Each structure stands twice: as structure tokens, then as C-alpha cells.
Image: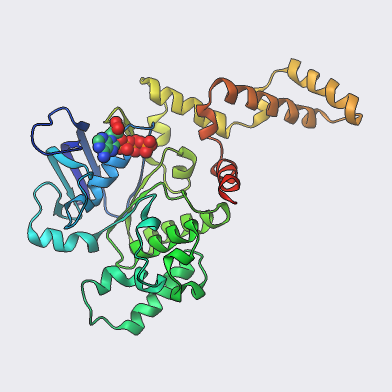
Length: 337
Ligand SMILES: Nc1ncnc2c1ncn2[C@@H]1O[C@H](COP(=O)(O)OP(=O)(O)OP(=O)(O)O)[C@@H](O)[C@H]1O
């Protein structure tokens, strides 16, 4: 099977292309992805996930791209048959139609002089002004519905929408061309908790029904695992593991993988399993005094919660691996006025 993504000893740099040998943020990446696969890219902050996603998207190659896009400084990268290091004119024409990209700030890059509907179909209309507008309108409405937005938004402008709505509009825009490969950086960011399952379902459906290859970037392993069990783990600008997550974490020889394994076990362990009997007894005494008799299970739950808080206080990184819902509820609460 021909790979839809193929990187051979690929290095990525930021900054000017001349005289910046030290600006490499990713080195020696070898990676292959099959058509129709879903791959999660995980890793610590600053490990190079976003830079990798950005070069995979090829958006830095397009006319008008700002200078802070990373570029390929060594090796080779092919995505959807496009040579991302030395693209031909034809490659550049095909690129926006073959590779979709959704960044955490894509919603903020929508055009405020176009309606929501016009923004969604803009990737097509900008290439073909004669495209059947009725068909495009229908497609835009279907996509808005698919990303769980009201059809009534079609005639509004992005500046009249909330941040979370704008991000979902950008999602619809990324999908209108039905790209072969879709790269999504932090899919849940800026999208409210209730809309997230719909978004993940949509990604899964697109993969299953259209065979769309998905690359999902996140430092939230739980979010990745909702979509796939195949992960690429980045650390310090290198890929340190690639494969089924259970295999990757089976016998971790690397410090970061070990921490991932601990955090994953912590997040999925039944909380009662983490506590000792002394804490159960202590919780029992406290709660007994306040509420009268409680069951062993209730006491275990209370003690487990205390233990969870203690662990998070000691090792804040555990908090990141808590379920996406809990984590983002707090975020959304903070965002609301
Ligand atoms: N525009 C830029 N110019 C120079 N260096 C950059 C630029 N963007 C990122 N970097 C550097 O590249 C490295 C990788 O950053 P990147 O954003 O790819 O990491 P990440 O794994 O996505 O992090 P996070 O999870 O925090 O988003 C970091 O050392 C960062 O400082």
C-alpha cells in the first residue's frame, strides 16, 4: 500500500532559511502513515507537535504565508503525493484541496468581510467562481449542522459569533473540500464541552465513510484515545515512539514514556484502587461524624478523591491527563464572562 504520509530523516526549522543551522526544532523524523489511518501525535509542551503538524499541512508553502511557518530543512516529506520540500507548481495547486488543516486559532483567521456561509465555502469559491452556488449553500448548511451549529448562523458574520462557534465554522471550512488528509491541532480547544463528542464523532465518521486520513495533535492522551490507538510520541523534537499505544507503553525505556504510562494508568484506574486502608478509615471517621454511617464504597470514594488531589498537588502533570470534560469545564467557566 502506498503511504499517504512519508517522512524520511526529516528535519524542521523555524526562522530565516540562511545561516540558521541551530534553528532546528525537529530532527531525523521517519514516519509513514497509511491511507485511511488515524494517527495521534502526542508529546510534552515544546516537543515539536505543532511544528510537525504545520509542515505536514504545507500551509507555510502557500502564497502569502507569514514568515513564522516552520520549513523542512533536511530529509524529505511527502503528503498526499505532494513533495513538501520541493513542491512543483502543480503540487502547490493541489495542496489546499488535498490536505486540510485546522489549527487551534483557525476560527480567529476567518474573514470578517464574508458571512459564515461564504467563509465555509471560500476554499472552493476562491478557486472556482462559477461553482454551483446552490450546491455550495447546501453543502455549507450540511457542514454547519455536522459541526453542531445552527443553520441560522450561515448569514451572520464571524465577528457576531462566539470563539467556540468560530472554531467550528473553521472546522466546517476545512472539510468543505473533502481533503484526503486532515491535520487537526488540538481539536477540542475552544469548543465547548457539550459540542466535543459531536466533533469527535464527525471526525470518526469522515474517516470511516470517506477514508479520510486523520492526524490529530494533542497533549491530551485521553482525547487522542477517543479516536485512535495509534500514536506518535514526540519529545525534544524527535519521534521517540510510534505504534499501538498499549505496545508503546508496554515497557517504557524513556523517562517521558514512563510518565505517560503512569499518567494514563492514573487516569483510567478505578479511584478506589489507588488508596490505602488507613485513608479509608480516616475518611470514615470524618464523614461518620458529619453524616452518620456511610458505606465502605462511599468512604473509599472520598478517600480516593483526597488521594487524587494529593497526587495532583505533588505531580501537576496528572491534572492534564484527567478526562477532557473535567479539564475543559474549568476552562469554559473561566472563559465565560
Ligand atoms: N515561530 C517560531 N519561531 C522559532 N521557534 C519556534 C517557533 N514556534 C515554535 N518554536 C519552537 O519550536 C519548538 C517546538 O514548538 P512546538 O510549538 O512545535 O511544540 P509543541 O509540542 O506543539 O508545544 P505545545 O504543546 O506547547 O503547543 C519549541 O522549542 C518552540 O520554542
